Amino acid sequence: MTAYSLRARLLALWVLLVASAAATAYLMLGVYDQSTGVQVAQADLAVGRACRDIIDRYAALVRARGRGVGEADLVGTISAALARFPGLEGGIWSAARGSVAYAYPTYEGSGPKTDFPAAERDAIAALNAQALRVDHAASERRPSRTQVLMLQACPLHGPEAGLTAWSMTRAHVNDGPTYTRFLAGLGFLAATVLGSAAFLSWFLYGFSGRIARLEAALAAPRPDGQDLPHLDRTGERELDRLVDALNAAGGRLREAQAQIVATERLAAVGRLVASIAHEIRNPIAAMRLKAENALVSGDPHRAAVALETVLGQIARVDTLLRDLLNLTQARPLNRTPTPVAPLLAECASLHEDLARARAVWISVEADGLPAADHPHLDRAQVARAVDNLLLNALQHAPPGGRVRLGAERVTVDGALRLRLCVADTGAGVDPAIRASLFEPFVTGRPDGTGLGLAIVREIAVAHRGEARLVEGAPETTFVLDLPWQPS
Image 1: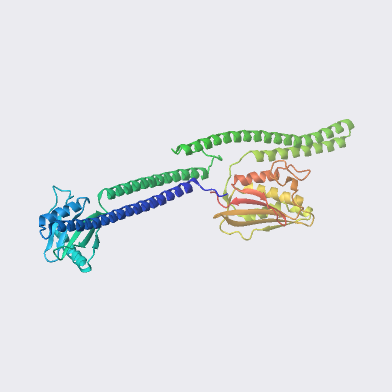
Image 2 (image 1 turned 180 degrees about the vertical axis):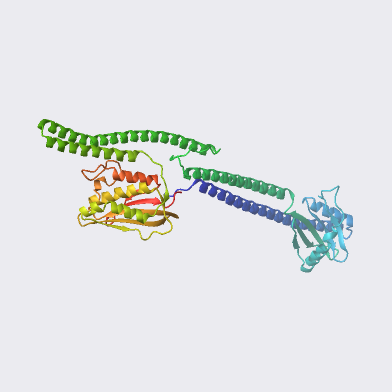
């Protein structure tokens, strides 16, 4: 199922609003055009009827008066014929004399209009001449921007030859009440659509900005380690409800994390105490047994052997306590530019006797490092970490095996780093302890304390680096990854 964002839905609503407004305006324009067309058709029909009415009334006048028809009679006949058609004017035209009679009985002025429309004289003369020529009614339309002028001329049959009746009116297409209502409706539609579109645009802009600020606040790195930051209110009621819910959830999450950390700390302390007690209890038990046997036997030689054993166990406990202090007491780093190749060679030489005794060959590979540029390290602590890794490798390498010390400079995300590796050809790490290999007191050897790799990890972390076991390597390989220079 496709999920659409609220922003996309509001944008679609904005598009639909504009489209519906355009369609409504188009329909309004069509209705207006139809209404003006009806007005023009009605006016054209009225002009034709008025012209025929003049013919009928003129025929009746001729029958009643014969040749004694005067101009006053003609004006009265035309006025009577046009009185039923508002907005129409007309008259009788003579091919020889021009306008014989004229009337505009419905003129909306100070009174009936009696002066002939001089502006349309040529059009009236031409149309009446056409009606005489074809001997039937002739009509003409003259549209302009705001009106349509309609004329009709009809031949008159009577005692005088060359007479025609004509009628004329104007249909207003872009003027008058209809046009005003159309413009008012179109303006109201435009105002509402533009206002709605502007409001939606403003809302979309503000809503998008608030969402972007929330996204940036959620995505920003948090040095305090919080999973959810405290978000500022946006001023949008619906969004602020979500902000309040997220802030409340963040508070509950921080409380739960604090409880988890406290619980884990207590559990870690408990495991550490149990491991220390176990590691110290074994030497104490061995010393007690030796001392009791020496006291019971009364043999001076046996007592001397027991004392030697006790001293050996005391040294073991002392080593354990020293390692614990190194693990738990943070020491400030003394960084100096340190040549790495001599450091590795020195570490290898310290363990040559053990390597020779176990028939293991140690090799140092650090030729690829620059000669003039050295990493900034605490030499003593890094040497201790390499010693622990090297000793661990020598204890796991089989007779005839090999331990390799290596160093290389690499670039990760634009930053230079030093990678020290210690690899051996032993059987590898027990899968059961692989996940917790760098935790204190985790060891695969019965005589091990499980603190060597934990100390290596703490030294790496102090340098803002990491210690790890390389997965899938052909040899058992531990890597100490350190920054070339402190950031």
